[in-house]
Length: 516
Image (cartoon, rainbow, N blue to C red):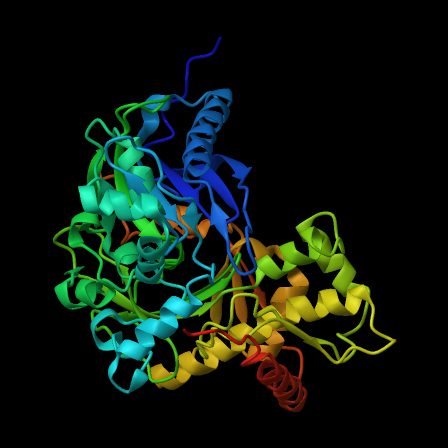
């Protein structure tokens, strides 16, 4: 048997815990090359209309499974495990877990970011503000009152779940976003697990002050959430603890970034004015604003982009968030049976020349940026006897491009400097029809890296920097790019977009709620 290869240089692992799947990926810190990975799909539960839950224990189990399987693949490539130097974590943001610090057991299923059970909670909170203003807390936390963010989910759990109420009373309740839940368990759980989060995830809770980067007493009082249940806030790149079990036992966990911020880092968007759009379950456009937390006047969020070390500067971003993009494709697959595999949507959509006048606004969880309308619901407009499932499939892909155009238009107004090209990543970008349509609707080139795993790469960069094996100043663009250039004229673009905006208006104020 040949000797194990140790010349590959330091390797960094990344846990990529997303909404629909969990992955563990291994990267070379010398070249950014993806060496190997393993992926497991997650079970999503929809117990009531608008509710989206996941099992925190299943999430944790999939992380351990993916680490074990990836390490087997590394061994099969004859690479020695001693080359691994650290692991980073990147995660679906805002998704909320509450658990008991004494038993380690979740007190309720994880409430996923796009769940909208908290719509009436949001209404009550807005009614508490002067002038009933959903943007009342934005100057402090950068976010509007919305079903999207963690504090509202915690408030709902404290109002409605007796087990959570009891645990808060007796001091055994812990809250965390997915990064905190994983880190606490992976560093020992009930036997001394580290209850921490990073600034990027904390900035998505509505409880962190963007100036101090700490939990804010006034924000916690507004939501009536005890600070004792919150994790400690740290930078995105430092050693938080060591893995307490499994094949990588003892390995430092040294990087944490929310998934969209991780993609910004993975795309090397380190300069002010650089932006990326990630196409996953939802769509997320982040624009680096440097060391200034810019407040948006056009429905964008102000968020922490990264802080790559305790003594490093904090960099901020404007973000446009769309709840349903890839999730609409999953809906076509799982609920309507239009396709058997998600990737088949491209062929189905290509079987027709255009959408045949069909427009689909997938506002399943209301509308996020730039509208922040919790009462919107999904609509399909323009159906005729001519319409087929291929037209609906094409309209589904086009809805992704239209929603991204709305984000970019708002972002350009806020920044005053229109983007000249858009860097993209995420699973849906493998769809060439979508990428061409995106370039057509934006009127600027869309640039896709050959290696699409930029989210996981960002977490690896953070962890590698923390343990001193990743130089972020050294450009490692070995993966290549594909550029899609606009191929339609301005008149066609405007005509299509005008129709889309008409469809969006049709989706508004659909849901009526009892506010008593």
